[in-house]
Length: 109
Image 1 (cartoon, rainbow, N blue to C red):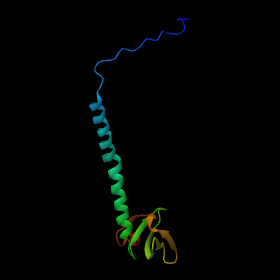
Image 2: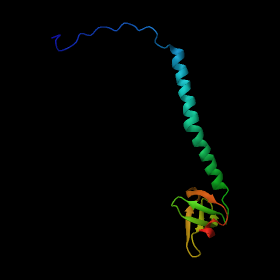
Image 3: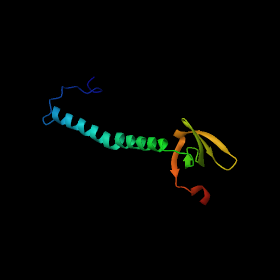
């Protein structure tokens, strides 16, 4: 039967395998990479978005998640009434605002 199945032998210990200190250093390295590439930039974006939402005022020109542009007419808690044109107003969540535009942007379009 040894023709079909190879004999299994115990593997001898291999010299030069990394010790516990090398494993800990690699783990710390992964944590540092994770922090600088993923966690820190995401926290920075969240902080910028929160400051944008908190700084919204009546009259600001904004772009919101649907890609529409409008001017804030009224703020009501977590919502804002945005005028898309002189006759069209929509109520949106403040969290849907992606960016605040410089004054006069809507007139130039």
